[in-house]
Length: 332
Image (tube, rainbow, N blue to C red; front, side, top):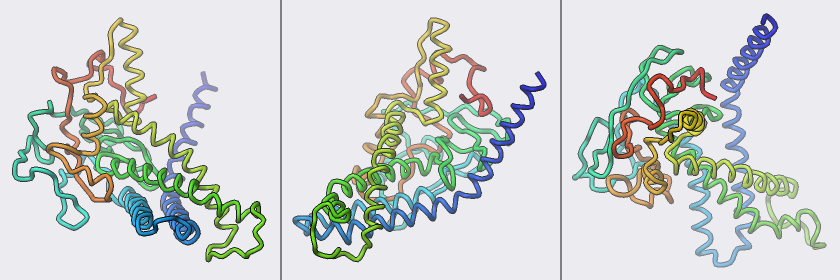
């Protein structure tokens, strides 16, 4: 017993040390990512872009992809995820903010939540956080690194959490990173073979970017396209099922509990794949136009994080009884 307690304390100490290192190193990782993305962009436009056909068409498309990539990264690291003690946010008036549809016809259910006849929106239940003592609504979790409760917490990512107000930018950043690295690999492989000397060309390297730098960026693009592509598919799968990364693990646990009782677990936030995606990106009627997926505008989520759209007839998950919800300490 004494040995097990000692091992447990050691792991807890290592966990706290890892949290401190992650929090302290966040700005350095942000800076490194900015450098790598910027260098990759320069490599593409210096080496690959001049060889593309129809530059009047391919040029603007490639520039738009690069602009979305850089802007969504900037927005995901600078937009606060939303904390439980924040006041509900309002849309800004700058040129970076998109205009929602049917502005004059919108009504509010609660401040920061768009009212709709098509959605069953209910107030979230609140519980007291065991770590910071604040009242937190459903879908909120306490982040060990930030040491604050985050609305619709998904995970902690390099310099801050991904939550209600920046999760959309995070997913779109991954999407445009996959698109850009895929295009880099597909369109830039002839220059990659030239850089390796496999085409036996005697002409000197005609580009401003050094040969070694292009080789490194090309290989890195292939690795990132594969790795981030898997992450993106996982996140789109959870979004289409009305879950965050944390809730995906929790719901597996709830499903096992319900199954042991001969019941079926039903996620009350799951409104169907298409509707879940529309709510996540806040598109369609009562939301924003579809062009906000192709231009890096800032938009508000459909809710302030204190009310949620649910399946008709459900006010909580089916198959989970009161007191069985996982706390932050118990999350698998």
